[in-house]
Each structure stands twice: as structure tokens, then as C-alpha cells.
Amino acid sequence: MINNSKNKYGYACINMKLAYPQEFDDQPKDVERIYTGRTMIKRIFERDGVDRASELTLANVKDLDKIMDWNILNGFDFYRMTSGIAPWKSEYAWTDLKDLDNIKVYLRSIGVKATTHRVRVTTHPGPFNVLTSPRESVVENCIKDLSEHGDLFDFMGFGHTPYNKINIHLGGAYGDKEAAMDRFCKNFEKLPSNVKSRLTVENDDKASMYSVQDLYDGIYKRIGIPIVFDYHHHRFCDGGLSEREAFELATSTWGDITPVVHYSESMAKEQNNAKIKPQAHSNLVYDRINTYDKQVDVMIEAKYKELAVEHYLHKYGESL
DNA sequence: CATGGTCAAGTGGCA
DNA sequence: TGCCACTTGACCATG
Image (cartoon, rainbow, N blue to C red; front, side, top):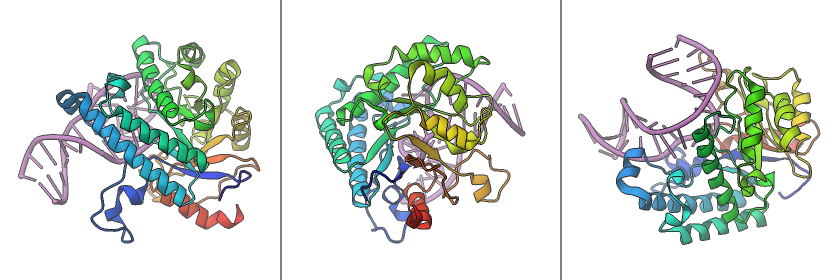
């Protein structure tokens, strides 16, 4: 399975059979769900406080450890972990968690397993991370959220490179992409080094937003962080480039690190239902992914998660 | 115990 | 103006 000359194929956050075992006939009955998305709504956080957050975080990292074991056992060598491991982390410090020692033991163990078995682990913090914002408070919140991810990867013992990437979108254009990208680059300098060294940016799926060409000219040329190419998004925002041109431009920004690309297909097409938004992701993917003879790691963004990767590899694996 | 309504944050797009 | 989508559905109160 370990072959550095081959592309890796990964899935994001949820392992379907571990998270929803009752949905599958071949899974044991009466087993606990294994998932890493435990959280709470604001009211409960205000009622139960940081101790509850600590318990949820511990439960999440315990299950992340089980998912990592599953990945290793099943030959999955590329995985995006959830950005919600530690609920409400923006509201407290790591040292406020009563279970921090235990949590760190699990994270370190997960990281050692990942490194030993060459499972590439990445993360993709959410749409509230807007480094282009003209509002100082928004940028501050973004720095807090990204710092959490940098700390987590440090706890896991990962290096300071985009091999373990922290990937975000630019998040806003405000009718002036140039000015917004200028703010992004200035705010980038405010990030801690454990984030700066791992941060990547991804092309958007709206024509008014950021294409690969925009990111290359406005971000990569100035601060040198790599671009994640998303095939599906490119269809809605091509910046004047063909798929091959955008793929090659984005993957040229990674230096010695194997680039990551994101692949998904349209739910509207899969379900043959024009009412579904074309941007929505399909359950499985069906087309051959063209990686243009370049070694890349492909994150398959499909609703059926690891099952979609298995389906793809079963369909095309022999010719990869 | 199942189900449905609701849920922190930012932004843009659509009905 | 209000809802949806996006990284990921999950939580919680009601019946």
C-alpha cells in the first residue's frame, strides 16, 4: 500500500460505517457510534461550561484514535480530520480543560500512528475563518480558530509544513478582490508560525469569488502559501483557465510537498434532479480523476465518505 | 425512544 | 428580507 509514486485518495471527517453502524447489515449490532463531531449548542455550553467541553473533546479524540486505527488497518493513507474536535475552543484556553493531559496523550498517539504508517492528515477549518475581512473582530476570531488547529497538529507531533495542511477559503470579496487579498496577506503575518507554515488556500465555487489564477497572483506570489485545486469549484469559477491549466498552476505552488487536490461531483447529476443546486456534492464519484501525470493526493469530497473512496478504487484501482 | 426543529461565528447568492 | 450553502450533521426538547 505504501508507494510514494502513487496518488493517495482520502475522505473527510466521517467514517460512514463507524459513525452509522446501524445503517449497514455487515456491521455489528448494538455498538457505539464512533465519530468525532460531538458538540453542544450555546445554551448548553453556558449551562455546563468548559468541563463539558473537556469531556466532549476527550470523547472526540478517543474516537479519532479509533478512526486512525481503522484507516491504517484498511490501507487508507489520506484523511481530513474534523475542525470540530474541541467544541467552543475559541472561548477557553487548552489549560482550562480538566482532561487536557489525557487528551494530549491521545493526540500524540494518533500523530505517531499517522506518521509511522504514512497517513497524511489534514484539516479544513470552516467558513467563519475570514482573513480577508475588514472587520478586526472577524480577523481576531479567525486567528483564534486557526491557532487551535495549529496547536492540535503540534500536539500530534506534525511538522511545520503544508504536508499537514490547514486549508481555508479567502471567504469574502467585498466587491474588491484586490483590496481583500491585500488584507489577507497583511493578516497572514499576524498568525502564529504553527499556522503560517501549514496554511493553504482553495479556489471558490462562485464566479465572483477567487479562482486559481486570483490566488496565484494575489496570494501565492506575495506570501508563498500553496494553492489547493478543487476540480468541482473550478467549473463555477475558472478565472479564464482550462482545468489542466488551473491544475498545473495550483500544483506548481507546493515545492517539495505533494500537492493536495479536492475532487467531487454534482449531486444534481447523480440524482438526475435539476432542482438540486449544482454545487452540492454527490454520494459517490464516477468519473476517472485526471491528475495529468502528476503525483498528487486526492481528497474525495463525497457524501458517502470512505465508501466513495472504496467505490472509486474498486472501479479504477487496477489502472491507477 | 423516535422525530423534528434548531443550532456561534461570515459572506454571497438566490427566491 | 430571509434562507441556504459552505468544512462536518449533531443536539435537544417534545411527543
